[in-house]
Length: 241
Image (cartoon, rainbow, N blue to C red; front, side, top):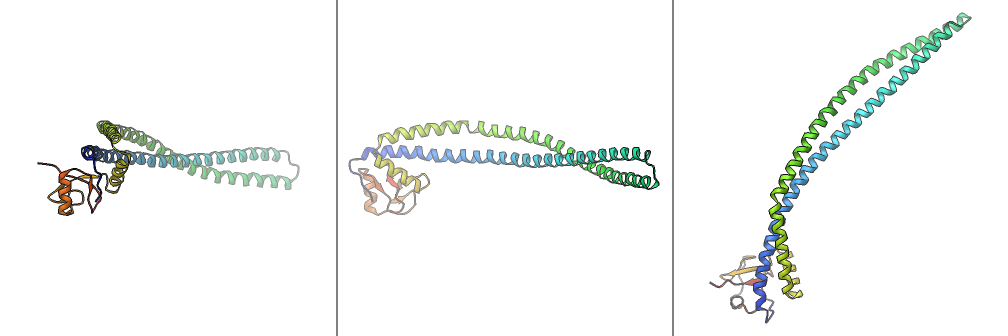
């Protein structure tokens, strides 16, 4: 039991402070839940965005492979042209056979590269379609999530305004109390999920629902000092009928 003689006027202030604290806890819980909903929506969009970027990266790599194959095919074409020019200028059969084989090898290599290029171009086209479709889906999802997040904000406007009012009220009441009493309230509130001041009914603490000693109950009913519950440490008060 903790008594603070001469602080009877503090009981009413503490009750009002508790009313504000209860509302603050309630409103913060609502707003935190709303914020989690917004974050969940944002996470969904980011996840989709990551998948889209991965598809774009795959497309870029596929396009680069195609460009490399095209460059190599062009180089082989140039080589074939030069080899054919040399064929017209050779003077011996040995040289002729050498350049002819070189042309043949280049053509075989070109055929293989062109076959690979066709496959790669087909693959690139498929990835490009996926990217285009994903971009459309992303834009729709982005607009949808933005709308849902704005709806959440609209629904919580009143709650945010009320929270600001209760925080202001809490601060004003806090200034009327001794710092030590305010610290005591805050400590108990933190220990008990925002409930530091509670009513006593029929010798039962309405915070922990445990019985308090009869003599202590009488002291609470008198309301001449601040008394704490011996079980949960909450500050007790009694409503007179």
